[in-house]
Image 1 (cartoon, rainbow, N blue to C red):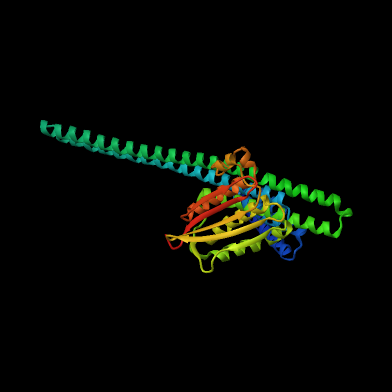
Image 2 (cartoon, rainbow, N blue to C red):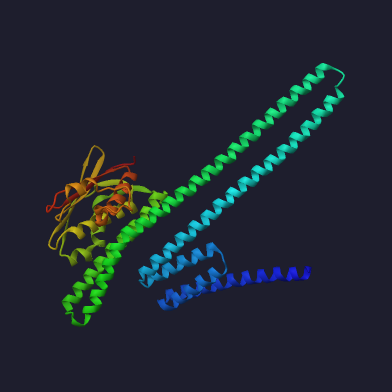
Length: 410
């Protein structure tokens, strides 16, 4: 029987080592093929990596396999599969965190039980000692009173200590349950954000590619160029939406690092224009800069790039061909105001009043519009940098979006 048990343990260790070796091999082969731009082979080995991870029944291995498969999907421009695999990463991450919370709760319960048993033993020991003292001092009444008082005091102290330990354990359990509820709520909000924000962009991208595929045999060179420009502009919108979802997730979880520095306003705006130059050219929209040289703000550059990307993306989306987008800035009392003005369709007063909805999964009309979620994220990033965000608009006369930021370290 002992020999059979030892053989079984050796077999389990051997299988686990084999699974790990296979996973490393599949990952290396997939990376090699990806570097060689052999995307189909890279995806096949990535699928093998995922299957191996699932067979090993390790949640962390499965999460990393889905994450790598998502990267391969991105390289293959299979964004639907990438989104699915990214969702699976979040599911496995939540499962790992839930298991960790449950383990922590179990450790707390075991610790409380151990402490209680230890103190019961101490209490029994003290009771025995008091009993011995009582027997040895039975000749006098004073000794009896002293022993009785000591017994009451010791029992009282032990009881208070146990009650404190019990309350502490109960508080830890309540805090853990609260964290689980917060995580569950955040997961539901994230699912709502991804559905409401990405669905329209993905649908537009899909419709455009289907239309292009159906009309390719009949398209002229000029029409093909225009289709490609529209496809690029739609892809740029989708990229901004995906970036918004990721940044909103980080912002909600407070996981995004914050590194403010002195930034040159005109350079920030020019870089944003360069990133969207294809979309501007496609719609024949001109971009103008009315920003003095040397004007600076103190803010996080990555966050400012996201802010300006959202503003220019919305402006391009809602400005008809031949329109104009203008970046401007000014300084007063240690604050610098940056903004963007477009000649687009504008926003009605009722939609403008409720533009910054804090519930990203809302089904309201403004949330269905492109600018709702992006502008909500924009306001949050501006406020995190110590500034304020404003919007002015009128139907058929365009919109103004501007924000103030500190000129120096706040």
